[in-house]
Image 1 (tube, rainbow, N blue to C red):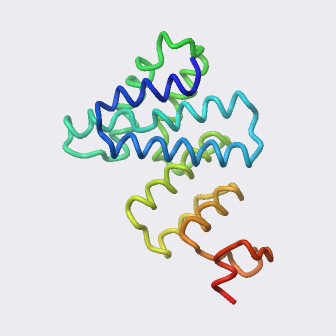
Image 2: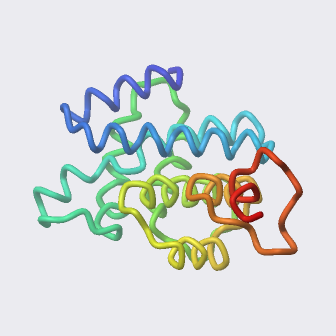
Amino acid sequence: MTISRIMEKMIAFSEGNIHDIDHFIRVWTYARIIGELENIDDETLFILEIAAITHDIACPLCREKYGNTNGKYQEEEGIPLVKKFLSGTGVSEAQIERVAFLVGHHHTFTGIDSADWQILVEADYIANATEKGCSEQSINNFIQKIMKTESGKRILQSVFCICAEEDDIVEDIHDPCLRFQR
């Protein structure tokens, strides 16, 4: 099944919840961009894209069952849901297992040991930060403590027009942060 078909299936699964649909489309967009900029291989990018589309698959269930979308509940409830969602789609068992792992760890920031997991966490944070209006201090804290990809850092800084640390600045007249800083 193509990414477009999985996206279409997830949109239908969301039953008109515009917030959820907009969120996973933005996470998918950021994940794909970061993945391509970080030059991850095609197989890893495919898995990352599916995980980005389905990462919050448990949100409707969590709202109903727990009254909230706590990250730990999402991780626990998301694993069986995403396995069921992807069964019969032509996605291999190994790919489904990896997607399930990522869905089951997208709110876990410790022990990250792979590009797909790192990029999913970064892409979800960027989308969440834009939705919630995170403070510059919170964003800088996330950049310093959690983010590892240079592409993810640049995108997050560009989205919020936060200048890089002085030694990280590259002279680029197209960077709006640098233009405003002068």
